[in-house]
Figure 1 (cartoon, each protein chain N blue to C red):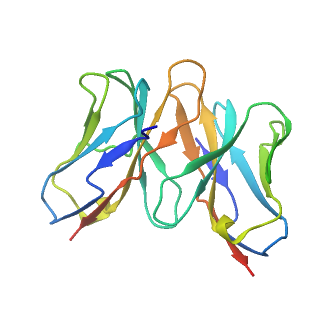
Figure 2 (tube, each protein chain N blue to C red):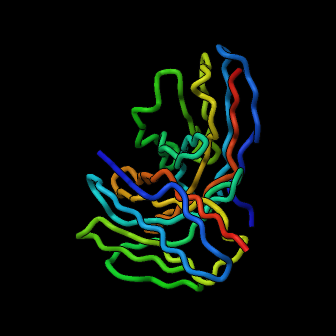
Amino acid sequence: GQNIDQPTEMTATEGAIVQINCTYQTSGFNGLFWYQQHAGEAPTFLSYNVLDGLEEKGRFSSFLSRSKGYSYLLLKELQMKDSASYLCAAFKAAGNKLTFGGGTRVLVKP
Amino acid sequence: DTGVSQDPRHKITKRGQNVTFRCDPISEHNRLYWYRQTLGQGPEFLTYFQNEAQLEKSRLLSDRFSAERPKGSFSTLEIQRTEQGDSAMYLCASSPPGGGNEQYFGPGTRLTVT
């Protein structure tokens, strides 16, 4: 079976840093996606980690540890527009299946 | 650059009625997915097509749900005898041929069953 856990909600101040953790237990794992979803909109791709380690992309970075079944998304220099839900998803190549966590709603305050 | 499109964007129907949604993937994307998302939850996988072949189908997809992709381009998702529990956002996504696994999502169809 598949189990993806991430916190429900986080609050942070504009300009600060927030780290969203995600743990996963899956049968068959090929990589870990992070998506951003604003209320009422479609999820948009942020990052995809296959190998262990940190990948940096501008203000956003994502980390993966396959041995620990753990990932995090790091958002730096937070802006008001970063207020959204952040979805962690485990990818299984057999069936091309994404299994999503419940999402972490991040609220950025001035 | 045309993204994934879905039609309709909103659908209100009475319990027991049938509904059909359409998804047009990004041009030349041969892989297509349907997900269902309820408020405050992440998307749940429903089914996956590679070209016209339906290769994967979730246990969530009861006998009342059927999806098709007859020519390997657009896809339809039909729900028969709708129930109030079917109320959700139905998301379609597509990805290109080859090794890229990123899925590009459409805006979704919000279904409300009254």
